[in-house]
Length: 267
Image (cartoon, rainbow, N blue to C red; front, side, top):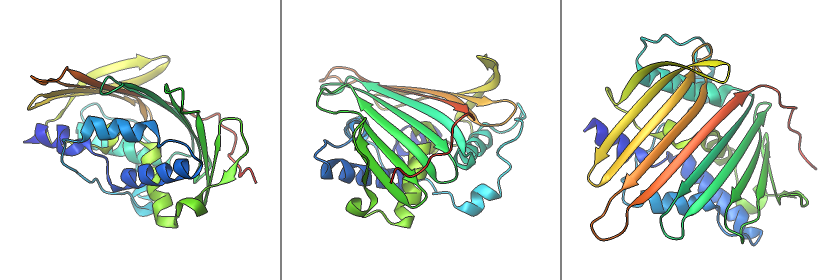
């Protein structure tokens, strides 16, 4: 049952992530853009899976966490991942890149670059391989949201999308996390594989492998050994069917910390 929870139930993002997709979709549509590529991707890849809403973290959760600290290799892997999740939400200066590819339908190849610099200050760039989807940028500056086609003029977006303070907090949490940190892992799901060095950064590697019905999923997570922050995640989901062709969905996520100038409102 633990594997089923992480693979089937845990595969849908929490309510905050759903809010992000709905709201960002509304922003794009209002600018005569198609909905974001990852909306379609997630719908295709997860349409047969039951929802599993994770808790939306509060300011008290984040402020009270000792997430940014060296990691004990003997610690419970679920505790390590939960602290890493809180740590990246709390961190105010980093850059993360998420890439997602799959062969369902016409296929997709999406890339999301996220820069954080300052509390509640995010710069998000979305790219899709589709020639009809120009790159889209978003700026979140405290309680304001701006959008534009890459290189074009910035426009105020929160009013036309109906974004209030609560939904904006959910958008931020959803944008800051890869799918891996939105899953519902159970005891025994994650295995510690030992220490590895990524570039010059010492990390600890954890892995999940699961099989439910006709779907296999492998997840690898690298956590900074000295700070407990996420450095890299990789996920591969393969669904086999006796009627349709095998479908694959892969997602990679990598983060670096520090070095960004503070993000300011464009207008």
